[in-house]
Length: 119
Image (cartoon, rainbow, N blue to C red; front, side, top):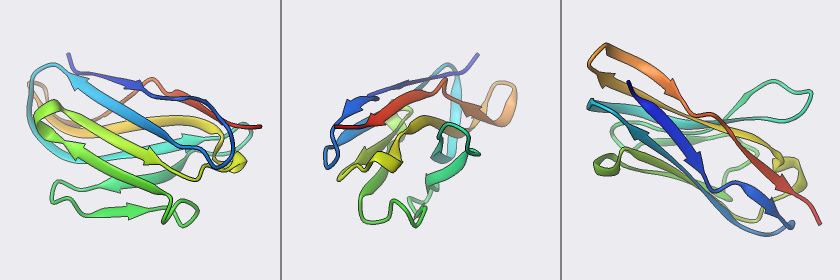
């Protein structure tokens, strides 16, 4: 059974930085796209960033130039470096990984990690 565990969230002041990590465990044969979504209170979940298996990246307009997504397939991990954080970045952040496992290909999700940007 594949599980994703997120870490790195917390409370940070405006202008600060955080780095989120999302590590998968289990029998993984191949990695495809990985990404991060976020959901703020009272809002729909939105895509933050995605990285393909060819290392192509795409970002929400609201985070371009501030956030950087990266991956390490050897560690089954996707990262999100968040710089110059703003109060509007406050949300629960969810990672996903599109993986080929013993039960086939599918999207696996992390449990979510809270990011709060406040002075």
